[in-house]
Image (cartoon, rainbow, N blue to C red; front, side, top):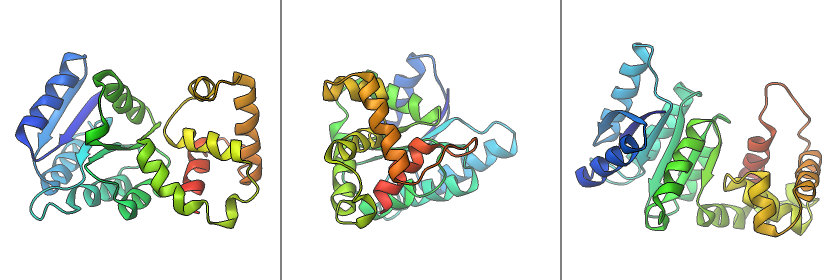
Length: 219
């Protein structure tokens, strides 16, 4: 996959670059602020070589508040096919929700201090690049804490909510089955029920799995 990294810490940026390069991926650009990130993506897009995924810090210069995630949201609006994985020290609920509310193309939100396994991190980047999701369980827990109060999910059983929460973390049906110690068929049935109860009919154009997660997070 082709990756752009946006991280103001030179050591972390170079570390991520080497990590991905060593595993056969291509880091086509590494930048230190949000303005440079947008410029790099637009330059690559103009050349017909849009990368597969952007890995961006939430807080970047000049104010170190929300420049990175705002740039990520803007890039997803301009290039829905671009995967975006943001890294943060904290769960920024407002921006996490805004990021997830855009295109159903790949998106991820990981907490830096909780990324403990290199292989899992690379797998998360790859999953987002391929159009999947990669959400830290703590991000999901905080966002869903508010969602559970809303009536839109009242029809879901506790087990279905648990399955949907694991879906929001980017887990496959097989991984969910392993986590819950149930059969793959049981998970498929729960997922089918979730789609039905949330009114997500099968479609050739909509990614029902992502739409279900977005409904959950934004309800």
